[in-house]
Image (cartoon, rainbow, N blue to C red):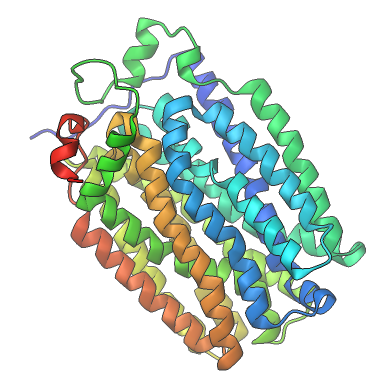
Length: 440
């Protein structure tokens, strides 16, 4: 069978829309992760100012992830139903005000509340981005743009210790929250001004043909998403493999994302100024990983008969690499070698994340792409919510070494879930069989 694939050429108006969409997703994603990372960068000063233990800081670091994870399930369906423009724009406004509130709190309880609202506001970011890519790019060309919007997360994480540590040292930790929150409000205004969903544009026949170039023939237009069709996704092993697998991937990634600056200062005795530089290096590697993963995912998909299997295998390989390099990162005495190993882990973690989101666009039926991506992200951020808590309490009871080894074990289980459960795409035409699949 001839599996060669020739990339269709985007019409000029589509290319312009793609460029605007990706630029806005990149900017909003960078701000998203600057806001998330502010608490990690200011970890030591906040603990001293508010008198928090390591366990309490773990709870505070995880508060965002619990609300973020729980909101993934309804948000995915809402994005599919009413479009990413409104959902992501509203989310930007909500999370920006929550970030500003984080800089004004004076008690542990109010800080937790601000982080919970931050998680609610940020929930539409990645389901919306997946929907934007599926709307504006043909199926076999979605890996590269997915890698681009995913690269915003490690880039934002890399910029956070570099930029925010300077702001914190020059003023104090509260200004870091206020400034990044205000920046988010500016991005919200630009998003509403420039981005449009394709169903609000009058596309020509040539433009439609480009977007549907390698899609499977449909019997008619994609149906409007119903609750029964959304719920039916849980009856597939593919959904559960992606949900459990992303749990393991995000768990290990969030150990580093939330605790890396604190780990370097507490366990490896680095100063705040040195930590700002050292903690940024792994996330710059993650930025490269996300970009390369998207490109590589497209490359192998065009040479494969199954986009789902090829993208799944990319995820599994990256996750097994994360496990392999976390073990020496935990055990070596040299700070330089540890940071080098952590850099490889975060490179692979962001490669796995980009491939996972590309997998969602290949495995989901056309009417439920954001829904399946959000379900995967729900599983991931249950892991993201548990990671800082478990890590904080293990580190408090013993040290960071067993905490990192535990995270490696969780990631290995996640890789096996992807490998064994994600085998084929979910069909669009299952709506009529929903009652039979999901008995009451």
